[in-house]
Length: 464
Image (cartoon, rainbow, N blue to C red; front, side, top):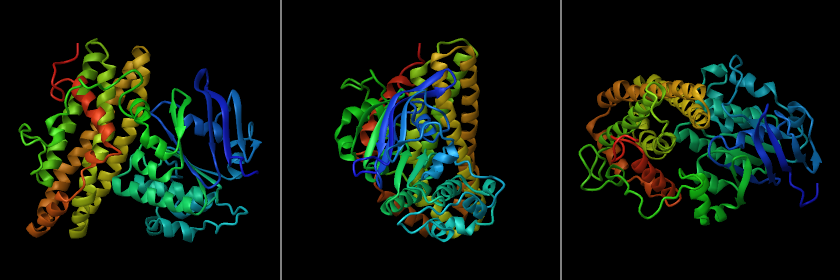
């Protein structure tokens, strides 16, 4: 392979499933030792691209080359043996094998100048796997399963590690462990191709980004290029879609999100305690869930117009706001204090983590079904409605565990001194909504929520 030949090159491929074409001339390249990301909204073809380059589907046109040589027609296991390690969406660990058995089942020692990945090295990177080595795959939390899926791929000693939704559905602290591990893997010279929605850590890790829209690459460049290109961030990666601009006349950000001194009763202000803040945000999230349920009933049972724009705005709110603003408060301040004080909460926190993963999975399914319902018929609407009911049910279960089980334990177990320390740390926290890399997305999101969502979330009446 010459110095200029990419490790992996995808050239103008068309691919899809059955008669449904998803990719239209998809092209990208990954250099040896580099990190490359695939960015874009759900349903745009990122996972299909990975399926095509791994041989899980066969492109109708175009070429996939590894070290300059075509790999078309090879089965997935043969492509993997070339030096690609896949961490699939949904983890897909072997449920009836132990952690150790999962790791060694597909292990391979390829000729490489780097130190090989062994059980000991994987356990050193993810100590939790060593602690759980005798547990079966279906006994692990979502975060532990993702660590196991990454470790399993590393045990094949790949030249290229491919991750589809690297941190989807994981708690903030677990996500940080994954990003730290990926940085260490890259530092060893392993190339990485990954799909993920968390732009801030991606900007620090990836050397090149490809933005995918409707099965095509619409932009590619470095992290510096992406930071500087507000148009790309707004048009393809923010809540605003093509043709939808947030202009100067857009509604103001709601007071409950600004923390104004004049915020209405129940809003989060600068003097709000941690628990008050969490409860207020629970009420905001519940208002969105109530609105989703009301609009689903109106469309599916009463024949009202399908308000796709409102659904897109609300689902994106439920995807972004809890992960960037709500959950970090719990993971960084409250949950560690409870774990350190009492073992009573361990089972509750573990169930909460599993419920969180189930909710993220249900949201991902719901977003896909929304796209189909928007352009399909009655059957697609019915499928969306059922998925919405499942999602709302799971999210409410998540909130119920926190409020009816975890918060009472916290109130019993933590002393006044400990609460004071938690509050002190909480008040010194950086505001995620003030992060320069996140703010444009959050502003666009909140503006669209305000303008599109019906009461009680927005400021207008029900959509007509």
